[in-house]
Image (cartoon, rainbow, N blue to C red; front, side, top):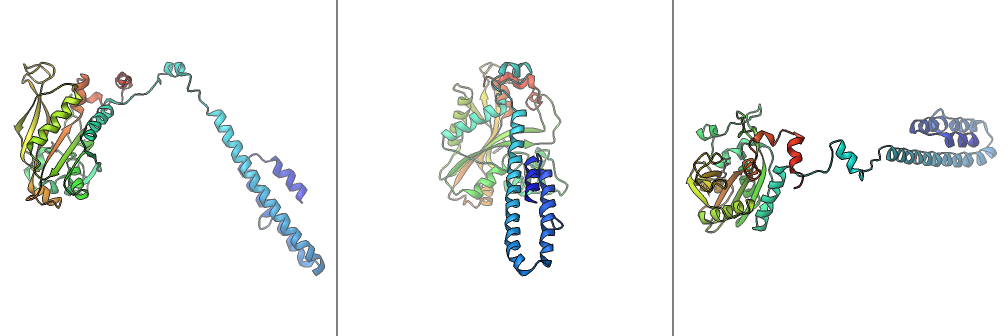
Length: 340
Ligand code: PHE
């Protein structure tokens, strides 16, 4: 029996064949069991020798089956390694097939730059989910149900009417306050979604970076300082900024922050729509009610917050004239940023 088994197991080349042989020899109706059955008729004397002998045989067969399985697996891996091998040193041929070297998407590149600038100023980086609840996106930001400010942002609601695709990164403020005790400062970058009519400067998905700093005596001066530093670093030159009053229910007072147009130096051109200033972001001092939602006592602490759209920043920095290029997936567009 063993001799036959040896011959068969030596010749297998697939896992299925190993399984068949295992059933043939060790299965319920297998050949080894048949031998064991015949032991019934053996004399006690014979049993004494045949019993241990058949056990030994069983172990031997088992271990050889295991070995064969391992061998076959290894052969299979070797085969795949050989057939799927690619010589990545053949860059020229990859380039001929349009593959070439990779580069960062401009949104990623600028996003990392912005994060690095904030990290160097001592900010933490936080994250939040794309699918938010009514509470985080609106309610805890002082925008209760039926508040007219909900109409400022056209929302993609889920059918349960309690969940939505976040319309801004401001929910990260609420999540940040839940996690940190003052003093703290963090930024939260990410994709946001609005049910907008799409044109050259509007997309239904775009990117924002939220910022928040809370502590004793935090003021508008801190806000202006950090944002001016950020914008000057991004554009590699000292920028002039100004605040205009702006309305957001979660800040009081609220502002829009503009920077002087880089292209015309404030004289007026097509980029700044002839006003000489470019709108950069919404910001303000965190509303006391929002601090209370975050379990922070507004009599002890104050804070600023801002939310900056970052697609437009990328467009300004690289001279991109249509926001739709950014998520078009068009290789002719993205391959221009390879050197980055
Ligand atoms: N969340 C606001 C928006 O999407 C921006 C903002 C953030 C304004 C923080 C003030 C403070 O437009």
